[in-house]
Image (tube, rainbow, N blue to C red; front, top):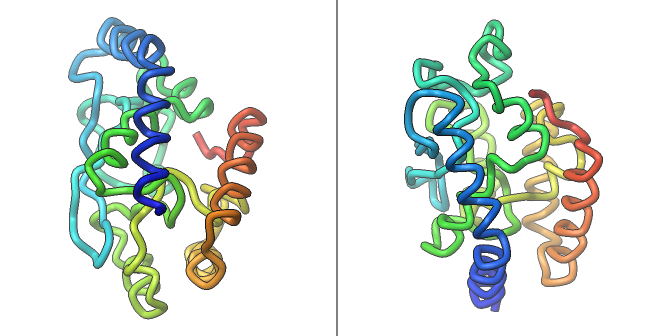
Length: 186
């Protein structure tokens, strides 16, 4: 059931957002060198690595680290990078990952391939069995501001409470957070 809902929502969102997506592609290409989409190695279900697309908000030479680990992350932003991140528009290409089955709309956010501490804790608590999500319970409860143990605790809570209605609640709270730009580090 969740997969059918994901497919229908992703197709609908892709259709509705086609013009903004094409516009963002053009603006990213016009304001910085390199591709419009950055493919990031991420940890998916059962700790399998998959390629997750995002609109490129950082310069091409940026190290493949979580933003909070960069010494001066603002120095790596493209001219529209800050806007893309704060508005969460950089996440739109992940509709592709939902269509291909690598992600769901709701689940724990996929870890970077080098976030061993996060992956280890998630695996210890069974969270690695979930399909990663475009948004999740941890995202609506702190997003980038959460320390890893707290993020994993919220992922475990999602694992235990997951249901259609809980996913709807998380999607609603995500929309509110995105519109308010709450919890975005950069």
